[in-house]
Amino acid sequence: MKQISFKISYHNGDAQDGRLDMYDASVSLQGFAKALSITTHALLNDGEIRKKGNSINGAKLYINPSRKGSFEELITLAVENSYAVAIGTSVIANVFYDLVKWTWSKTLDQEYKPETAQVKKLEERVEPFIGEMEEALEIPLEQAHRPIKKFDNMVIVIKRSRIGEIVRLDSETLKSVSIQTEQNVIRDISGNVTRYNILSGIGRFYDDNLKRTVSFKLDENASSSQRRRITWSLHHAQEPGQGKIRLDVKRVVSAKGITRRYLVQNVSRA
Image 1: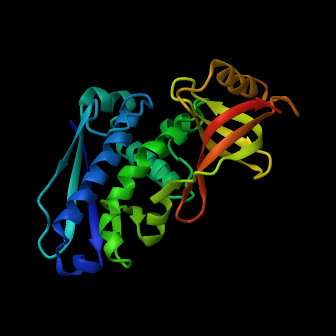
Image 2: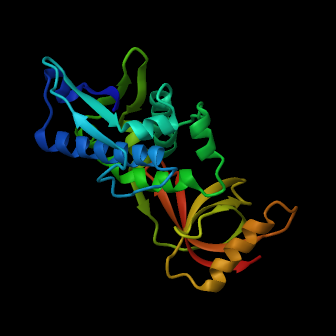
């Protein structure tokens, strides 16, 4: 097996004394376990997203004994040889860290562009891979922040050996994954669908008013006519002034007030 090892380090708060509240620590590590499992499974299985994060096809995650005098966990990701070879044994660690940094940064409202060819392919997919990953990672990463809810000055860092920091969680990133759904419906949002997965109902929508794209999710009980309007908009989005539709939505927003996605209630032609 190809092994990739890294550290999850907790700083400040109780961690200064080399300890954490047992419940907070267990919730945090469970969140990390789910987030890492979801990300690794997608890496090894052609972008397939498992939202529960209970298992990984092609790899296992292990936790090693804590180091004395700090609250630092050593994590080992053991990738089966066949999966490692398929990606490239010599580059799989770089691809793993690149995918973690890209998908987690997106979920945490941070800027990062993929650097490896394998992750760039996922970014360029017609299907909205990153939108589905953000939705899958929000709850696990919110759980990973658990000790920070008690200590505003606490920082949690994933560190790569000889490279340094890969991901940093703090009180600001906690706001990005602390989300709520507004109950009021916003009507007649005009724009175009730019990406859409017909199976999940998740896509990207260019909002003419905001002048940017926003993730959306179509209700699983949406009518066939509404689904057709979504795909019609997608097919005509590249034609100037064409493919315009109007959405009635509920907004999912973060504690920062940033719109994370639209929950689509109705679709109509503009």
